[in-house]
Image (cartoon, rainbow, N blue to C red; front, side, top):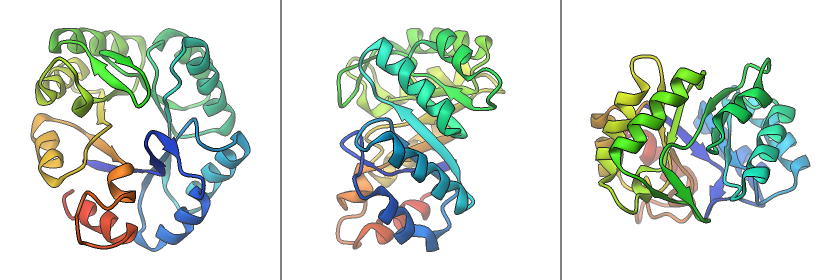
Length: 222
């Protein structure tokens, strides 16, 4: 699985994201992302450029809570030129915005609500939506498995895996905050996972040390 480090805490890009990125450069992370809120668009542009300068793939995750705001964030992602756009539920409209950019899109299956986002929906719904997204041309889905409110998280991962089929990529985001959860996601068929807050607050590996130590602990699980 790919570990996607999110320069985010509590679903917002951290204000000192550029300084943090420079600090962790020696780790050689290859997948680094950020959210569409928390800092000004100009900072996100600079952050994307800095991520690419480190030789990593860039990810923008949409957490906007209205449909209009989510589409505006997709437009911002297209303007920035990120490699991957995560989140949102309006697949057709978003794919139209991204047409010709080469940006891979991974919408949210299920019923995401609020901020920080929670995930409603059954495994059957997640599987059906995922299949529809893949058929429409999405690269995969971004599943908030461990933020589920009405279903077992791993049952949702398994459902999304079935919906993705052989070609779609399954990324799991939100509350992946301990080694056991990474292992469970791998066993259930996830292709990647994101971690932000658990690395910044030191809760992924209690007592291990600061952010670089937390990231090293996460990498040891992959």
